[in-house]
Image (cartoon, rainbow, N blue to C red; front, side, top):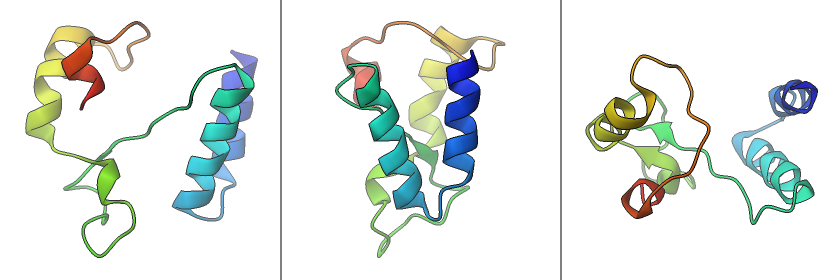
Length: 88
């Protein structure tokens, strides 16, 4: 838990979205993971073209089945993902 708090503090001090993504990658690799991904709801974030972050966009309609199946009434999910969920 303390590591997550440290990560949150580190991400909050990022100078830009790209800096935040780089910090998240370093954190994930520090645990031996291949990396980490952030997805942002397209209608809430200004990441459309010509932004360099269009690959982070996620529509609510694409997310809704995952939310219903995995999250239910919870705010978070810690567990494995199947193929279609990984493609979100």
